[in-house]
Length: 394
Length: 112
Figure 1 (tube, rainbow over the protein chains, first blue to last red):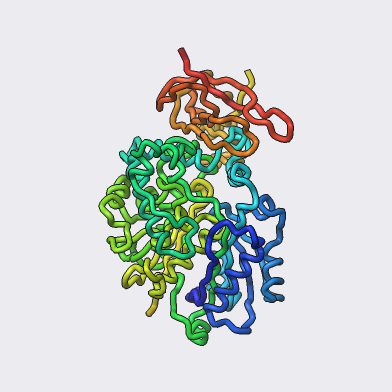
Figure 2: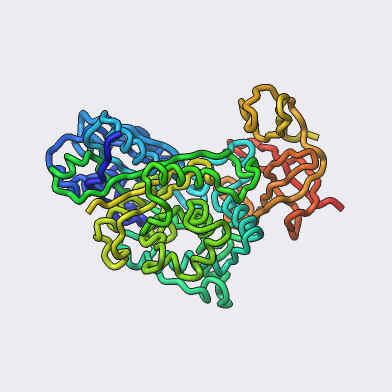
């Protein structure tokens, strides 16, 4: 396989975007990545679109074909990649494989989702369509409910507290204030979320023990990366950030069939694969973007990916190790918690953030001297996980 | 009483629910259809206060129950004060209306 370089990145602010259609958003993010790569009029060989549910949210399918038309990229190959909340990561992986194999030289990967076209409970129902139809969905299970059952077990087993969970939310929302692309621009405090007499109003129960401020918001948005070879990236005069490792792994559809439901095997295996392919070890990672759709996931993933021993993630968080300026800054972008989680966009947005960090272009949230980055895109409830290791060559 | 159907691998004995075409442990393809036993214990639960579109309730408790014969399944928990490890007795009732039709599923009451 030949090295694959991320020559261009771009995204649009994640928020509620009533004026833009899904394909508008994909096109805006795609153009930004093409321009960032100095692509000019060079042809793109293939376009991969990461999107979970345009048919259900927006009553539109074949959105990759619609996108090449809007961007005048014909006759580029175009595919929509659907892999639940890991659709973005899957799209990047497919783009990576296309360039690494030599089948394509220039690939545009765009992830996006327009979720706010429907009301909240409807969005919850659409997202719940990824659960098992007979064993889970009919009972009214939601993704927060799966996270609630997981959180309860994790708290029991490892002594994680609501204070720990809230620390994730506080940190990521503080980081979000430094990220103009983040949906949530609001500082929160431990008092307001946990101890104030109005705390139950500020952060009501969603799926006990999960409260509102343990959940990512429902957002619209899109993010894009342009992948190419090292030679072409040099011709385009772009900084060299390579995809050094990619790993993907799956687990059982339902949580209850895992012998230990607190063990996120797919996270462990996907991360190990990505690290092993890259030759980079967890201790060499300077910045990580984890999939904190729920606060517990940032803690659990930081352990399963190999950054901290099992049961130690919450302590590392409490000690400030995962803040910007700490030993391993996690989610300097604000993560899903603050940046937002337009489902298909997330896996791509994580990589956009890492590229900005590794190029030294992350502004006020810059992790100083970052060379190696790690991202983890968590699909289903841990049943399909994709990890990336990125490396800056400068 | 109506209930779910679980699957016991004829080769290695692993009990599975829901259905798989190959055994999760040994890849065996032949299964004995079994019913969960009457009682089980609560492995984990959540109290959902923001239910999805299509469920017209303010609050619903869902939990994973391990039946005495090893079947594990999600169901509606009808206990006022759910506790991990509590003993529950299984029932079968409408859990959701989809396309105008009642869909039946597992519900659980505390055993006396």
